Image 1: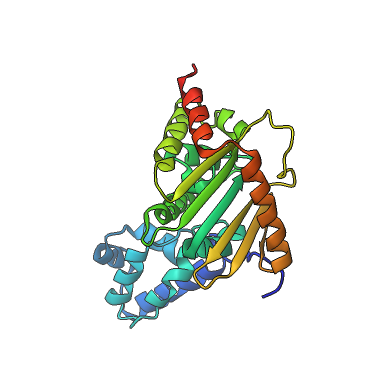
Image 2: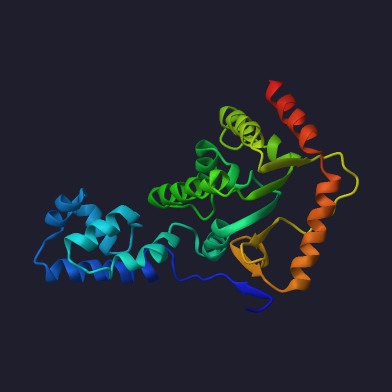
Length: 277
């Protein structure tokens, strides 16, 4: 793998893998002599939902894929696509990084615009997707919301990965979704920060020295020792694997942690923000 890899664009809803999978379902269904309504009744879905799956307009859940493989006697052909189909829940620019993130044993995140996705409440995440520009369809919002919440399983998985976050204070002041959503998000940060494998630090607005002015990024260490960096802006993303680039971002993150509030100071700040009206 080279120093940086641009993320794929072939898995957007309605294109690529979803359409290929949908055509496969349709072919197996027609071979079995079933219409959509009958297949739906056998798997617990409506005919219109089956149509959405077949046309690549909706991401089928893993349970449906296993069910339809068995019902249509596909002999594992459909089930073999589960991982690739699941990736379609994410925007194209994040799909490669999502797979790496799920397998990481160490994860460091520097956030400048919003609370990191791994820490977001459902209300906060929904507000973020609702504000997306260009505007997202409601169906896409629901898919991406479900995918974002599913990513958070990494926090409690065993063995526990080490997770650290440096979040700009401005992010905590920004009332995305309204005051109630913001308060819920601040409370969520306090709850997650109590976990032994999670550290949350806030970069104060008052800091005169700042190592992160070039923008947000994520650092990942994999089980085999590989160290990887991920950065995105305006839907353009890169996965960096070259040691020089990764090492540069590791040094930047080290400086950010030194310049930010300590975890204890950060907790006190969040509690103070919660106490303000």
